[in-house]
Image (tube, rainbow, N blue to C red):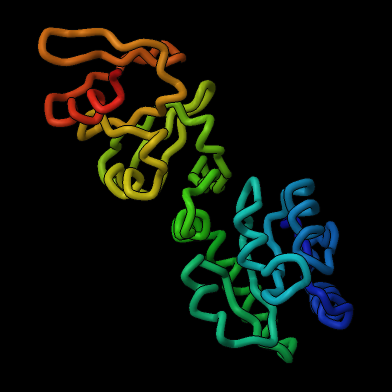
Length: 242
């Protein structure tokens, strides 16, 4: 059984999907929305497994909706505009239904959904919806088990290199970002997040104290973690000393 939400600004579009869903007893409709703002509320409340999502809607686009979700479900886009197809697959949408579509075409999309579930496919590129913005992001999407959740960057105490990925440490949890630490460094506000080691970035707002250690420093964070400042990044710390 998989929980479903339909998001489309046209009543006819929502009705068509509901009719097609009648052939799939394993897909249970929880709710529907006719605009992006209501879509965010419903999806965050019901935490569906699958969302049929229109692209062009009042309030915000379907892609905007994804950036406001606490957890990222499987997405099947349903729209009359084909110019968004490439972007849809870049965020690992299950399928892209171009209106008007037939029941047979709908079945293809559902079959692809089943394949995705069986293969447990992650959707790492959806993270770029939050990161690829002209201003510094306030929230990012990170993987936790089989879901993507949003994390407020102000809650991140420090960032640690984790192979080709990064660990984001908050007060109560540690998350894994699909971005490497150098990529994160470029994306984040450098007046708040400071690189102090090739394997470490710290949030200045989460620093408790700085202690001299021979020719370097140890940074004690508010959660008690101690981060070593390497010689190669000493200048980043000295710039903050007055």
